[in-house]
Length: 136
Image (cartoon, rainbow, N blue to C red; front, top):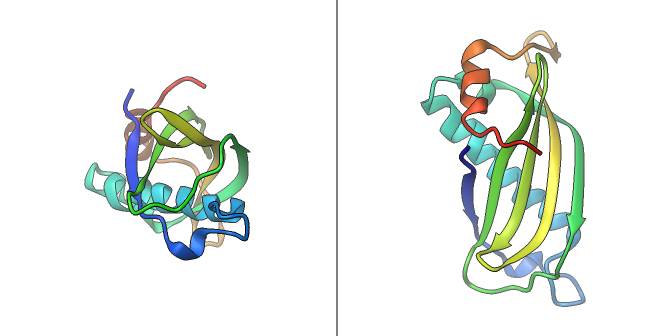
């Protein structure tokens, strides 16, 4: 089991009127971590088709503690909890070493942008995703 780690910078504009990172911004943090994992790192491991089309079918977020702006980036850990024939599930933690600010999950579907339809995972994609597999 290996988690993908993305260090995401916080932006001043991420804060809301209450002085903490707005709930909507967490989706951007998850997206940045997911893009880094699937579109940057997965192709270097032989799963280039993942970078050609994956869509989000479902998101779930549990907000645990307020995150306030600071110059240090926030750590977003991402891992796979399930791999099926035509979808996979990602889990995330937005965290510092000693505190978790949010937990989230996404159902992802490989998508053929030319045919404009979902597709099945290829064996090489499954292999790369399974390197991040951790039971839910």
